[in-house]
Image 1 (cartoon, one colour):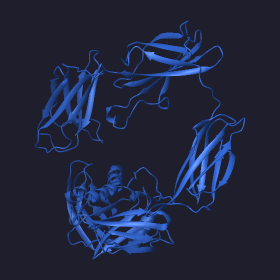
Image 2 (cartoon, rainbow, N blue to C red):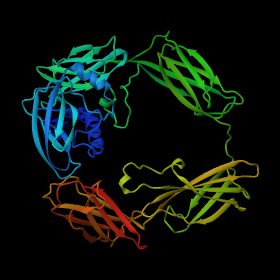
Image 3 (cartoon, rainbow, N blue to C red):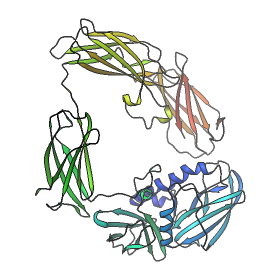
Image 4 (tube, one colour):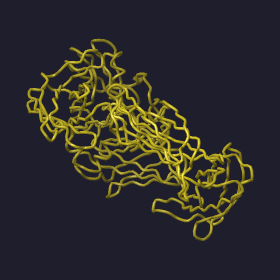
Amino acid sequence: MNREQPEVRRYPVGRWMVMGLLVILFITGIYNSLAAQWEQAVNFGVGRGVQLVDPDGMNRVPVWPLQGESTVNFTLYPLTPADFARRMATYGPYNNAAIATTGLTAVTTWQQNFTVNDWYEPQYALVPASVASGIYVIKAESNQGDGDTEYVVVGRNALLLKRGAGGQFVAWAVNLQGQSVTTTMDITLYDRQGTPVASSATNDKGVAHFAVTSGEPFMAVAQKEGDTTVAGLDWQWSSDGSYWWWDHNTTHNDQTIYLYTDRPIYRPNQTIYYQAFVRQRTLDGYAQLAASTPISLTLRDARANVVATHAATLDAFGTLHGEMTIGDAPPLGWWTLSLTVNGQTQSQQLRVEEYRKPEYEVTVRSDGAQVIAGDSVQLTVAADYYFGQPVANAALKLKIYRYTLPRYDWYWWYDGIPSLYSAELVDELTGTTDANGQWRTSYQPEATDQYDAHYTFTAEVTDDRGLPVSGTHQLQVHWNSFAMQLSPTKWGYQSTEAIPFDIATRNHDGSAAGSKAVTVRIIHDYWDETAEREAVPPQSGTTDAQGNLRLTFTNVPQGWYRVEATSTDSRNRQVLAQNYL
């Protein structure tokens, strides 16, 4: 796929279509190609990638030859639409086997020389301008060893497919370069055996409608005046597909179901009241199901045993309601209420617990919202009845959990304070509340070198009637006495440009941490090398009174880099900030 084409990016819908394919083709190809590079002299990547090449655009296919100089011979073998559908249906999502070319006739061959300095940067096979639009297998053979094969579609159009209810399908054809829809384009839907199951032509809006009465469509092939393009209906062509998902078809439901209960939690012997809204999904929106449509509801307990089943029908408003009673000795935990209509099931979870409202409150607090690792923090646990009296002389248990925060590289996926499920229990203390219902202790939290942590303090107080009540407090523990941020003014530069970096040093309360000595390095990492290499000499400076500093680099060679800023706090601990360029 020619992701650099400015014409493609300029067209919003085309961009969405191309980027949807890019999730499948580019990420699968580039991400997995790294593993293949260790074993093959040249490769197109690993897995079921299909490269979409626009002859009016860059007209090239990414390829990874071995490092150094090599000569690669490329060959194109045309495929029929039916053969392509059959092949894609049997080519596993992470299949490393070469694509078979036995029985195929080569139509084009060419040779290219490559000089590779960076093993992980793609080179490009330049498809000859004389190659006609169509579906091909491209084969690469290197003079350094074995080669690789890949599927390539040469075409000037892209397809967007949507699956509807009741065998309804919609296809939309757009031109990659003309910023316009493609009309009168013949589109055929094929099943996994390569058999046509439906066909239609696009109208003046570039849209084609299909009503499939038999067979399961798997692949769409569109053709007009010698131009061909394809799109699939399995997961790898889905707009929300991800490379780690396992193979499955894009799914659809014939009904939209909204099922809910009157409460999220119940006690034994209580009644569950439920209600549901059900609508049939159509191409034009929603419609009500026939009143005679059979519907079943099933309630299962925490052990997956069936507690009750109800048969139901919809009223004139497309709704239903009912009730189910919980027994006097039910299994406690998560229960499931399921509604099934026309083979589609919607479930709603609820809890069954033996509980009572607490009569007192437990709070945990510290003498600060954050602390530096190694410093002591004062903790206070307080228990008070809701009518205003302290819970005196009550047994107390304090559990302390620690969650080590990911390093700077991974902050992009960290969001919010972690739960106890992701933290480790590091300490457990016991005690007794005093006459004022309070208990105090001093605690020294720790953190691993260069890692911050979140501490969670959970106190459980049990009064003289044996009723336990818990309270929780969270505390952020920093390894350094101040934090640092490193930011480029933009993410891409020409090698001839000056590259400024903004450094900010801040105390953990957000105030400026001025007069901090900072050193910035631009580092080129190689996965196959232990030692790191600096692209240019490092630069140093000192932040001003507001904690700000700008350092500018020049003559940075072309490449991808890790940028690292380091400083030292008052405890002689390193402060580190990283970014990428």
